[in-house]
Length: 602
Ligand code: ADP
Image (cartoon, rainbow, N blue to C red):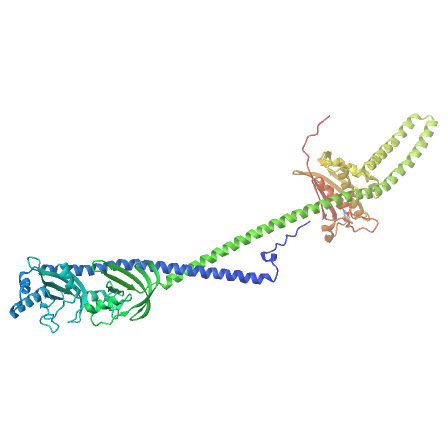
């Protein structure tokens, strides 16, 4: 029997031994590289997402800051236009002012400036000379200074209004100048009414947050900053005409303009960047949001240190690496299972093929064995028959002599009586020879006639009758009749004879020899047992008794084929044959399926 499970090869079995560690290292490296890559991508993605969210938040805040700047400027935009209509101020420009008139105008502007909370109010004549100013009391008073070079003055003369951010040449304080033309009723230009706004309040307010807020002009020069060190830095290079114009207008007067060095690292959109900036506090990365203010021609900037939470990005990285590894191991697991399933399938197919081949070989061998065992049995049977026939022949010769004498004496009745035993003896001899004729013939395989197993037992006992009687064996029979089975009578008889002969061999030297044969139904089966009191089979021989050529009998006596052939015949007939021991002997059990079909009577 093929009982051992096939040894399944592992995945590595398919590789040459030297390639395995190399390939293993390569796979490990690939998996680790994949995990690192996944982690890096996830961290980068998490970082970018956090930055974009931060940028969007910063952009909203920037709009609020722009709004506060607009509101501040708008509050004062109309002030110079309104003051330009004031008759007293207009009168001051009509003709050269007397010191008394100038004093009145100064005090008036001072009062209005105080009420409007602007930085400075000044009245310029048609040449740009400050006729009166709200800061007349201070040493930095504008009065008497000429501001004709300032662009807002020329803008006012040509366009009626002007605006300009500049550092005060007199005060040194930067501010936003908004101006409006003062004209005669006929539209003749008399001068300009100017309001100066400074933004210290705004800068202070903006300083409260951690963000850096900057306002740059059209040339990219930062003129408002809520942090020290950022003001008067240039965001783009200035050309010659810029330099000339800055000199003429003295916009930033004596302030040195130094470039701000920065480089965009990642651009989210036109007005949103991640930039590395060499700021006044050292080099750092900033989220840089810009918002153009078209009304003034300025740009508002918000610079914020990116606050990508390290833990968030690390967690994203770990999660991605974990997912990658889980995916890889799942794939490896599935791949391994698939390979194992394939190998198992292959092993199973090979095994099945092997079993088929072995079964074929065994069947051929068995057929041969059955045939040779039959021939061997025939030899033994011939001897038994010779013995069986010789005796009756001698007896019959004597009977015939007796018969002749009786006939000679005219004792017809006695002669008739003497014929009976002769007749019996001849019948018996005919039966024996009939058996002999069919026994050596190889029965066509697969012959399965309906037959009575009890009759097969009878037949077998009859064949061995001489030996049973000679050896004084007592036979006990418990046979259920009829016991219908399907099979080949001769082959089943061969099984019975083998079992009985073995039993007789076993009890041969026992003083009291006993055989017990039972035939009874057990569910769907007929159970036929042959038990003897010959001492049984040694425990270590039990597993081998059905092996071909297993014998414990002396050379010449046993071939070791009887049980092997019987076992095969039992199987062929759809039954089983097994061996066991009971109290003082062996017991062989033959089971065959009960044939339930009712025989057709002809
Ligand atoms: P053989 O009879 O030629 O030895 P068998 O195949 O008929 O071959 O039997 C094999 C062996 O089984 C025997 O040699 C014997 O050892 C053992 N055996 C069979 N039947 C009996 C029995 N009834 N009691 C004890 N041993 C037995």
